[in-house]
Length: 254
Image 1 (cartoon, rainbow, N blue to C red):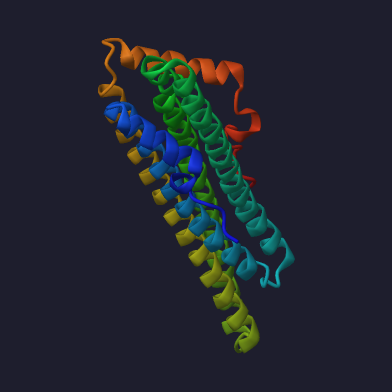
Image 2 (cartoon, rainbow, N blue to C red; image 1 turned 60 degrees about the vertical axis):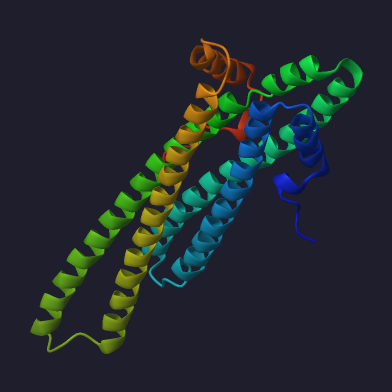
């Protein structure tokens, strides 16, 4: 049985209903925007992970052990980045559900004003800003990986050209070697394309996150809302609230 989307969890749907009933439309928009964003992000990360896993399987067919090890290190590093992002999303989902439940309980005990404060305490814009930072770092890491795969492909092409010259001298290179060279060159080109798509997807997600942060921040009622978001973001990082769930992506393996 597949896991429920965040927008489908009872804690979230109940909080959205309570917010609507009490006319807290800005707060309702914040919660709904975050839940919808998390669901979309989770789907995109899952699709990227499937593509990387398939690429890893194809890379594993390379017969040249040295070439295979170098490529597998780079792909494995990219897979680790996506696992970190998925862990961060799971943490945000769990925290949102817990805080949504607490917000509803607070409303039942203390009323509308307390409900508004409880939603504000969810720190939705700053949580999104933290995700944005993670996505930007991972996009940069994916770019480095794509460039390193391109470098390996260039090395392979240079070596292939050298072998071709030697092969002409020796009345032709055996066809199986030609086929293996072309297969490896094709796989490296494909891997580089996959990493380029991953970079573009992560960059697009980061940009969309930034737009959402700006919109939600601008809708906050207090004049110093942007400053408060920055302070809340620093608080989240200082508290290490998410621990390993929001790691700084490591530089890809060489």
